[in-house]
Image 1: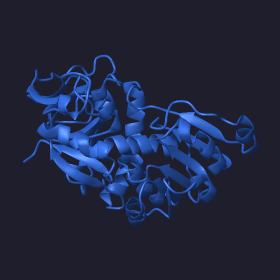
Image 2: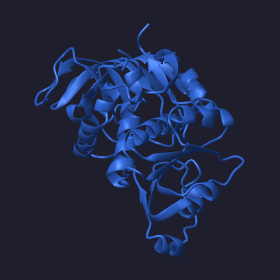
Image 3: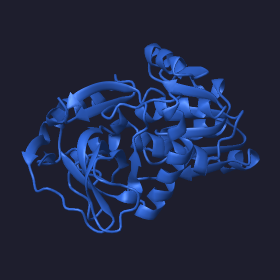
Image 4: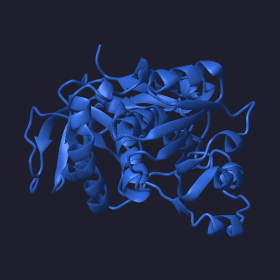
Length: 320
């Protein structure tokens, strides 16, 4: 098979499409013939040498994929060759085939295109586990999503609205804010020109920025509010006013998804299948795809991501 190999840490030019050994299914694993993968910020960090895959994971980037089951190893439950699936991966999605524990595999919702489905696992599992499992967002509460035009942001808008919450977003341009409003957001804040803490009071904040936003996030919380930090684009350190946190009876959670054990990922995946997939089957939520790029041209896809001009997901496809 072929896969995207990282020759050395660096820019998009270090990605190359090469022939590599085919994966073989171990106990409890499924082999997926990959129709598509999707680009995530973790892939950019891995390419730059800052985010190595967990031990035992393929060295190729790619935290999600969609495709068709081609082989099933011993002790796999519920899947057979020919199934249309998508999967949450610890790595290896930028390839023609990938091995993945069956617990991390989901059938593609009927109303979702197989290629576009590659953009669902990471965002669906991230949003469900953080916004609903960890932060316990409830109907009628307000969710503030930083990076509303990102893949995670566009999905969080749709899912929170489907569950009856109010949604505010931050984004870096009027055009991106307009797109978020089209997807169902109730309010948008241009973070380049406005202080979101002066405009929004939220019950739950989904934060990809980290340190730089910590003080503002606390100011933007309602009493009993919850902050979930899932990224550090604004640095890993910030000043926290514990007095303000105590007065608001608020909490700050930090989470990651990639390095979690298979069993924990399986719990999240089952929650997504049970609670999110029916909404996708009904057409209430959908993947927002900015561009489809041939997987062999992954460097171009990374350039699109790094430009910051995209809305939604950038998909890498193995199909014509």
